Length: 68
Image (cartoon, rainbow, N blue to C red; front, side, top):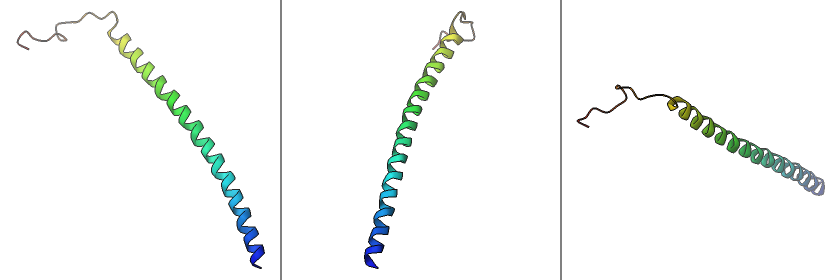
């Protein structure tokens, strides 16, 4: 009886190890994806800022008053 229980526990442990490795791969892939998405967002944000100010002449509302 004890030997059957030990075998059952070893089988469960083997399945858990496989599952942990699979989950670890998924998390690593997701982290890579998140890094790429963050870089893309930063580039897009920089592009939007540069387009917002490109060709725009500062009007008097954007300029600082002389007493600053």
